[in-house]
Picture 1 (spheres, rainbow, N blue to C red):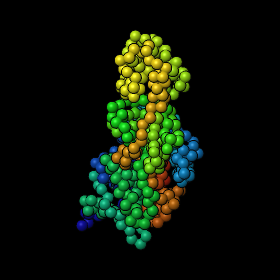
Picture 2 (picture 1 turned 135 degrees about the vertical axis):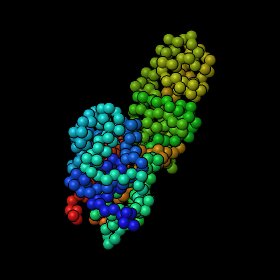
Picture 3 (picture 1 turned 45 degrees about the horizontal axis):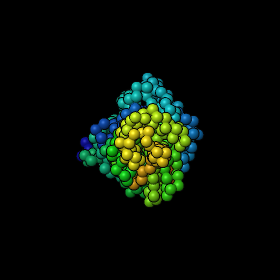
Picture 4 (picture 1 turned 90 degrees about the vertical axis):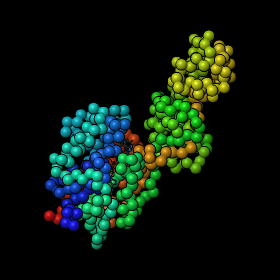
Length: 419
Ligand SMILES: Cc1cc2nc3c(=O)[nH]c(=O)nc-3n(C[C@H](O)[C@H](O)[C@H](O)COP(=O)(O)OP(=O)(O)OC[C@H]3O[C@@H](n4cnc5c(N)ncnc54)[C@H](O)[C@@H]3O)c2cc1C
């Protein structure tokens, strides 16, 4: 029985970016820390971030980050001042990981390799002598007299500690280990869980068109989103067709807003040529048709559109593909013009947690001290990262939430340990 029991100063549950940062900070002043992860390896999701390039933060001012995160951003005020974007940039650069800032102040490792970020975190855990226990699932957290007392692992081992930091992440991309177990324990312990929604997701389209265009990536397009024929938002940038619908930066960003409108009649329209107004596009079509005046309509759009899109546009235009372009009428050009400026698809749904980048909702911020990440219910419990009711848009904001809250939780958990 004795071998089944271990005692540490601090137990951190969840080996994602938040848990690793918490354990690094908690151990920095000599506390005996255990980091418990159910996967075989730490940082499984971290390696997928930024399409494997890891957008570690957004190099904006603290005020801008708070404003961009929105309603819950104020909660982060103290955490960002304790450990903000400049601090995480210094943290990695000090360890000789050169970084670069791209469009929209997104910061990446110069190597474009998330594994370079993970490598430093693993090395620091080792240097700080953190006990890392992988393949170890926590199945139960118990409390005694208003204090968290111990953790039970799936292999029946028991871990006791003075302080506990829960960093089990959200419910999105469950294959990475983020299956939402933390929410269940915390709810049982008396914490409020703000309802959970998949956020930053691809969208599912009613029509079969995306399947035919699967993999087609659109650059420099404007996509507008419509609710009951009223425009909600319009965004310029990139998107991609998937087997069931659409994804890519514009779509992912808009999905958060669409989630709350799903019962309405939702559509999106793609402007393939946002740089040209209707008149200018008509002139461009006339010019192309003059240039190719002996060609058939089906062979006349190659300079204007991606190859994969041409048969779809031809079909929807209802212009005879065998028609010589010099015979295309003004009315037919108008129809074509409309298709290129307002290519409309019906939004059926947003994808679920399986494909969501982030979980919206989580442990109520009202029950967590923003200066320390300490639970207001259990004084020896700290909560950090995606498990909190905090999420931001794409651009490095979500990892910054992890670094800042993880740092603060780790630092504060290491104060006043019973030695
Ligand atoms: C595809 C994708 C790309 C992304 N790209 C970016 C990006 O470029 N920039 C950005 O800022 N954000 C990005 N994000 C979001 C970012 O990955 C998350 O915000 C971040 O991983 C959350 O970190 P976390 O440590 O709180 O949780 P997680 O990373 O989810 O880690 C939680 C860990 O806890 C473990 N765990 C859960 N339950 C238990 C248990 N019972 N016992 C033991 N261990 C347990 C899990 O296995 C997991 O390893 C991306 C997300 C996805 C899905």
